[in-house]
Image (cartoon, rainbow, N blue to C red; front, side, top):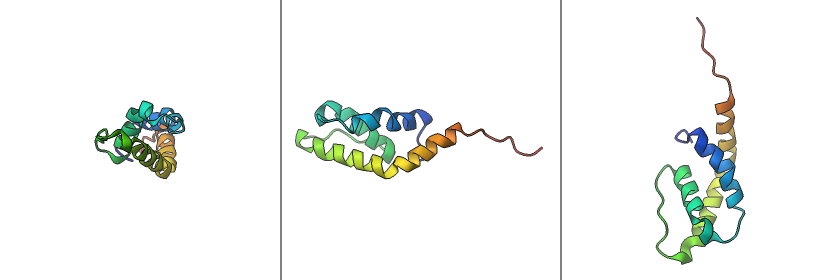
Length: 87
């Protein structure tokens, strides 16, 4: 999760958390691909057949579930004040 920016984490926990609950997978395929790409830290391309959309959406949602607590922790770490160390 070190590769994720604060904006990425906010998007995954906010916008994507809402999208993953919606039906009409084809309408939200871009969001599922973005989530998978962010979580895997590599580009995930659109499946060649629309018959695979549902499987991709399920994979993205499952990955999000697996990483949810790490994402919450990561977001909390951005909000912690940074110490300056001892002088």
